[in-house]
Amino acid sequence: MKKLVVNADDFGYREGINKAIVYAHQNGVVTSASLFVEREGSEEAVRLAKENPTLGLGPHIDLDQFFEVDHHIGAIVGWAGQKPDFEKVKGEIRRQMDKYFSFGLAADHIDSHHHAHLHHDIFPVFCEVTKEYKIPVVRFSEKLAFDQAKADEMKKSVRGNGLVIIDHFIEGWYWGNLDESYNFAELMTHPGYGELWREAELANCCQPQLKQYLVDQQIDVLRFSDIVSSK
Image (cartoon, rainbow, N blue to C red; front, side):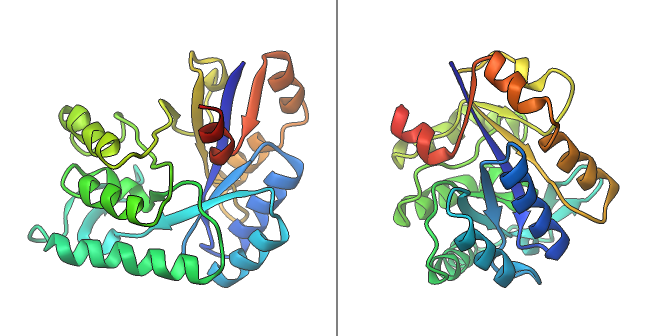
């Protein structure tokens, strides 16, 4: 049986996104969410997370201050000026992790806004800090890596820190995504209210026929913690 995590990014961004993620968890297939610690909806997201304990959770680290971001593709495209002091980057990751855990939340995965942690210079530092905080799963996608030629080298940071990556990454809803070949997969989605593309993702998460299709295709929808325990 295939095992799939449907993860909603941007929990805590604002109220309309928070409400959509919770709705997609309660009425759709979203099993997990990644939470901003310092956005206008963060406090509400923490409350909603505690009210919905079946929703898997992890920090959504924001490192945009260090990068130039192309918002059309939703990813970093280079440094914002000179390459930063990596001790400063590490300190910023730790600061956001400390704030996340100060909310009294558990974490079974970690990722970042605009996939900043997948810059090859940042990734070893990111994995090191993830290990310190005992978070088992770090998001990894060779396709989303800033330099795909560095992917094998980046995977060494995962193994060296005893972390888990989900082997197959599905970058959002598109035709045939659930039918791809995999044993374990993460499907990234961005449900929300107030933006057409987010509302389309919310609708996909909550399609009436989708749950039955998953049963028929023998796709088990789980949280990251469930997949780690089954490996």
